[in-house]
Length: 357
Length: 221
Image (cartoon, each protein chain N blue to C red):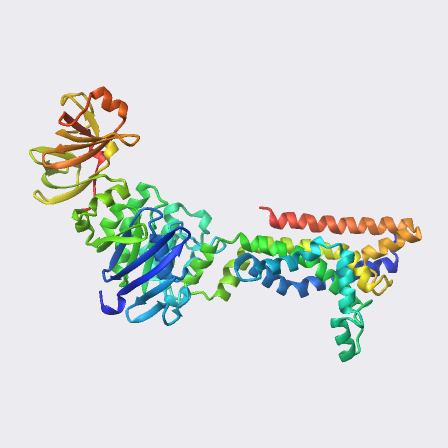
């Protein structure tokens, strides 16, 4: 990114019982802030957009100061020219799609490229209540782009959509990233979105940036466990591909001397794929030859048990990978699991999620 | 049913006064409604109390306070009398002022309800799309609050039509000059003109019913 689109954030904002405190410079084309709700990521975006005023500090876009408590600068949102896409879309209900899009357009008579990029030309005469959730979000993105912003701020734009819809919107976001030459600040609690879209990711928790880096490198950082817990994905593994067969519809990954089968992806043998498995998606069995439909049965050993919470947490060593598994106390007692027990981890192919490729 | 010229005069005065007071009070009502619904500032609860006061005060008390203010020796009335030589009390202007003060809280209430129902997020979104606060008001807040605004207008209008206590205090009950419908009914009852009372009560009821029905239509989905 050129210097004039760098975003400098160095400010503090206290709300009721929590304080957001950031000090960083965003230089990537797409910067993602990853955190759970309440981590301060929406507060951050509102301060950048100008709809919320920080308590102290500075916010600058290139060499233009947007907010500086010391010199009393606080550019109102309408002067910042940042397109803002909200989780709920926030389309104006009394205006048609076309009117919504024209609302912020510098030249309302000109048709916006955003209409083509987001493929909404069919929807222009409709009112927001006549749109589906996915359409609404596409219109919201188009509206933010039509104002010809200097930067795009996206607050969980996909969070309100179901996963099938998400998968249909993500290509549009990629398209936006390619077509429009503006930086994007994207906040999300979904790890996979940060992975697929961002060039740089910031891990935010309790109002502070815990880690930053390229999204996939962030995983190997000490913060990775934190991310995993925050995003509800406890196991993230980097595994090489040993076979990928379109006709059988599966790709095989190597985990030590064992293999893990995942839904087919178009990828070459030898490449490394990051996969995520939720702790509760793993079934523990004492026998390998059980008649189940699940395709993956990995042998391992219980390293330790944590019985303090409402579920039993197991750490299972599979080859040299640790798998976190969550089961009920009842199941643990029935299987008589203890440290050193030999177990088989059973999981469906669909429980193994590919983070990106 | 034969309506007398005096009754027509009372009815038309009531409608004229109610409409005029609506037109006059609408801009300050919009401002007060916006301030109360959308802004936080020191003295907000004081402003709210001040605006709503005529709703809880007996109209006769409001009328008396107005009489003191607007009379020839009052702060406002005295000034106007000395400067322009005009006496406000017991004139149609006094009727309009009395009716406006009494109906203002209902107008503002409707506007506040309407504007408070417009999500702040939509207004903030409009700001991020480059709209100034004034543009946000006219393109987002105002149109989306229209149900509440219309409701407040109609309720205020109906209140103005029927205002009695404050009007009789500051404007008297002069037939053909300051005698509104409500005052005409009062006089007719006193004079024992039953036929006139029935006609006026009937007309008042119809007008009130229509106003309320319009409110329901505009404010309920």
